[in-house]
Length: 456
Image (cartoon, rainbow, N blue to C red; front, side):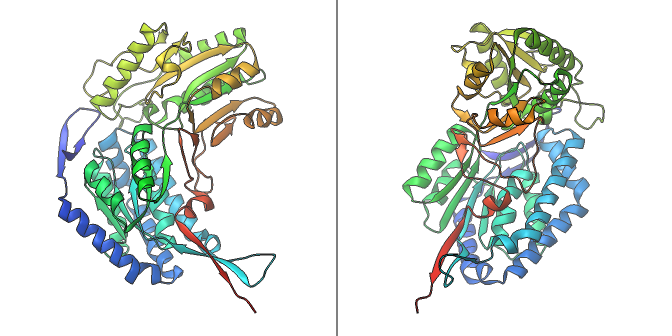
């Protein structure tokens, strides 16, 4: 096993990075633990903020270089690579500006001599996916480094150059060795780190299967764990929704990042047979007009999937759905060109016995449902194991809020396909995991909220 750069647009292997040895991984932990106890947590908050701010400034100057690497390694359309880099810059700026307030001592109103102070826990192990190769890292690293923790980062095996580039930001900014450490390590070595007492917290963004494994191991070792897992997010199109506007939002929400996002819209549920048929026609027309192609071409609207494995997995899901009675409205096949391309796909006639009813399709595959009533729509939206995000479209926003209160998810977006921002907390419920990243909630996940009480 090694970390590989494979260009998804061509299938070409470009670079290979060997795994670290057990000794190298444990040496990295030794360095990180020592740095935490003897240096980083002892520094004034202003000094930690200064280092992280400088890392953000370096990213701002290297924006083009970072965007290029994201497109090269995971096939992200170039303009969306820039969007991701800009979002990460915003995350740096947000915590640099607001961390002092977030970490300030909190005086308990009922007893003025009782104060809650925020202290870091120690070494945080983060295990992150490839689909947003900088954003996923920044959500953990930026707030936790400012808070005084140190981070061991195991990134996905297919974005090693993105991983190294992100690590270089902190090195160039003056962070000493051990504050932020990139690891090229195996699953077995991750287990070894979780078992080590010096690792005090674990953050994972990944699949439900990975979350089960990491959560179980962290639990056995009595460690705080944050799990950001999968989702099969529904979009409820209510009776007063504007169909044209909603179709545009759904198109972007399903195909953004080649559909490879845990909060992409994956299921559309339309209330009303006539409106449902109109919406299906609108979406089919839009899907058929998508330009699939080279992610570096400014006219491309859908790039490749990240890997051959990802493509074959989706093709199998489509075939299984079809065998179970699903109807392929459009798409469903591999695109005849080099690289890992899938036709944008819409599937209907999905009953409860169809495996796609409960599965997450991690790519440009949309499940489409028509129901008679709003109650049916809410039931269908909730009738899966996931609960990450949800989308509601309705011109009556007050009514949409009432429906949102009945949706079992960590996030609900009304009349938009998604809105990621540093100040908005990110996370889910049910099998989509637990804990939150970003906002003030995110910085608090790996803090010791210590009570200090003075008696007179």
